[in-house]
Image (tube, rainbow, N blue to C red; front, side, top):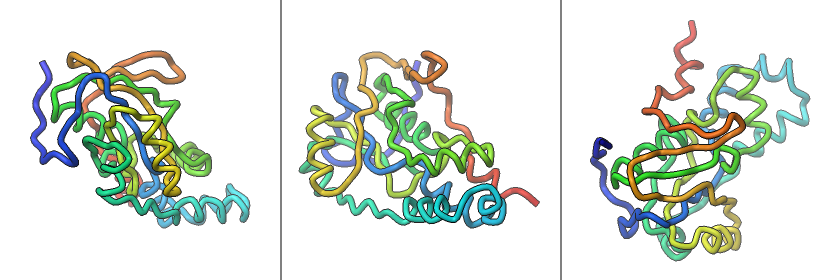
Length: 193
């Protein structure tokens, strides 16, 4: 049995089987910014000046996505990707509506520079605070992606809302189930002595 997660609805408060799951913005940005702040010397010793410029440019990109824009693009519900990253956001929104989900880790929008920083520092980008990134539910995800692109917002359909309570994910290693959220990976950077 799925434990109901209490939260205030966003948008029209509709999160129903058959809807698409869309991510707008790039995941793990806030965590990667913390990594640059805390581990700048390590990163600059490993990566070229051009890489670091591209990384900073990716981190400085603004989403500029308002509630009105999300609703006009077709969003019926959304969850900001904050502490715990995209996996926590998926857990929370599916738990709030007691609905199952399927999604692919390979479809999440993420900048290559952020992935490389995460690999170097042993951080899981899926469990990193994203900042300026939103998980949305929509009846027609591809239409939403196109509508958001017209506003300069990068987005991708990552999965579906399903009947039942299973939270299934696919990735490089095959298919598995989403686990209860873990502490945000950002704490690996801030708790070091």
